Length: 89
Image 1 (cartoon, rainbow, N blue to C red):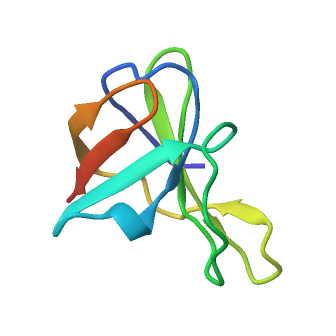
Image 2: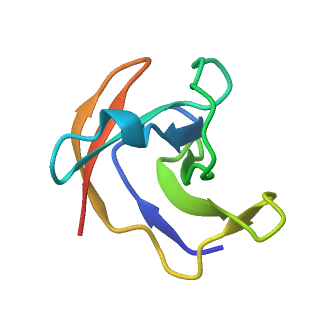
């Protein structure tokens, strides 16, 4: 799994809430606690370890999560306990 170091967001998995995207800003919500609406497409994820390293996941052909082949390259625009806004590069 490829990874990159980002400002510490707290360990955990954040899922892409694409319904809330704002132009080139992507919105992520805590995967374990946010009540996402049903979606026919899978949700990409950003996983943060306690040291602030981030790795990315994406839905596979059978809907199970699989690591992305490339490291996530993004800028954190806003971070809070229930929202993460990023600009992908």
